[in-house]
Image 1 (cartoon, helix red, strand yellow):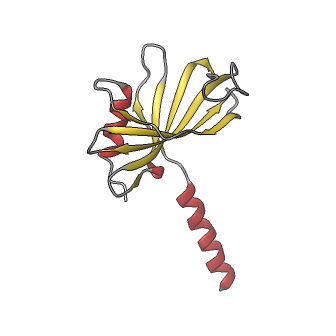
Image 2 (cartoon, one colour):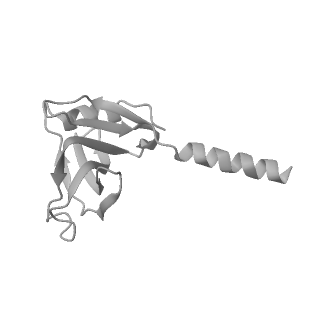
Length: 137
């Protein structure tokens, strides 16, 4: 009986940790796309937090202002942990992970707090709307 309960608890925790990437911004003119992990969307007091993935058709270079050690390395995906203030229409980029074409992490950085306005008619506004309109718990 204990083994069964332990296995059920382990299985439930694995399911809870599973990501669910949903396409929010379809391929743009460059072939890039943006996805949101709906399993990661959490409702905070006045905001929502979610992981956002950018997939690039053409590899990009890591900027030295984000990570001097990885500067110039090519990445194909960027994952951002973002917090959106749905009332104030602002966002904070908390964490960024750059991955190469093989999915290997080439940079993993916490970022300093910096609140930004959500610019209208942009891909980030599409992500903002998607996250803020979700039924996160």
